[in-house]
Amino acid sequence: MHSHIQQLFDIAAKPSRKVIGLMSGTSLDGLDVALCELCGDGLDTGIRLLQFTTVDYAADYKQRVKAVFSKRDVDLQAVTLLNPWIGIEHGRMINQCLEQWQLKAADVDIIASHGQTIFHCPKRQHNIAEYGNATLQIGDGDHLAVTTGITTISDFRQKHIAAGGEGAPLAVYGDYLLFSSRDENRIMLNIGGIANFTWLPQTLDAEAVFSSDIGPGNTMMDAFIQKHYPGKYFDKDSSLAKAGSVSEPLLNALKQDGFFALNFPKTTGPEVFNLGYLAKAQQQSGTEQLSHADIMATLNRFSADMIISAIQQTTAKLDNFVIYASGGGIHNPLLMSQIQQALPDVSIKTTADLGINPDAKEAVLFAVLANECLVGGKQKFSNAREGIPGVTMGKISFAD
Image (cartoon, rainbow, N blue to C red; front, side):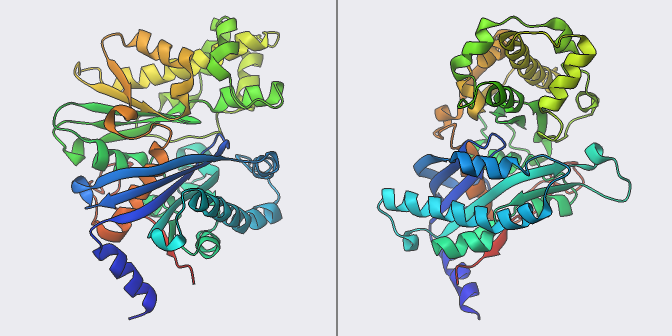
């Protein structure tokens, strides 16, 4: 037996495993690093979040990634060079975290790396007959493993697509394993750059679990702020949006994209919902002269309305569920208040009420996927169910 295989066997045989989950989302604000201790597998998965931090990206890092992010036409050499470079940079960030936490590489069993999505392209978006669903994350796992000296599991989304999914949202797997409860029906609402949600029935029936992207969360608001207010990356405390008024003509134009007419489940990304999308909606609605505050107020309402609509559509026959929110959107007070006002009878909490830092949730979920890759079996989801194939995901990179 090769020593690498023996190493995996030994890690899997441990009563618990220390896994660093990594998440770098579409907001490009920084790398979420979650050190987790996991035991068991499947619905018997137990987890403790030992450490969590977000390592802010430097301006140069953001500039390099943005040059190839969510664009159909990019410099192929830049993409090729960034793939290992991001792996090395993420590795250096982990090494810094370990030093701050007074840990050594040997104290960690596995790194679970999401990588950096630069283009998400489901078939219903590209509509090219001879091609299927596709997505691309860069930040090579081999470079990450060698830089840190820690075995790395990465590139989770490709197996999902190979098995018939769209490569997203993957949160459904971790949501089901960590947050299912016989005490209540739950909606796990994540408001990142793109908003998505998972429906978790209290029956724990995997066949009844439902997950989908909703549409824009923070991505258009953040992009607008970054363009017009250099040095700022988001609308802190909704201050600009609160100062403006919603433009109904622009709001109606924003809601006209065909994505919203598609049946759930579905996936999307900043490739669709971006400043070009906003400019087109302004042109169609004759609202090019709106103030920045009015535009931000309208974008905020747009995100809120689509989240509200998705929840109302999928819970039309239900009156007993609790929403647990996570992601950067929970720090947008205007966005959260609009959702609560539209759903006055629904309790909206955060994953902190379930013992998981809401800012760490996505990084934690990738640690769970890595744990399943090591010790779990196939999920109990049927491959016949659209969007949730029953597969184990992740590619393994050894440190030597």
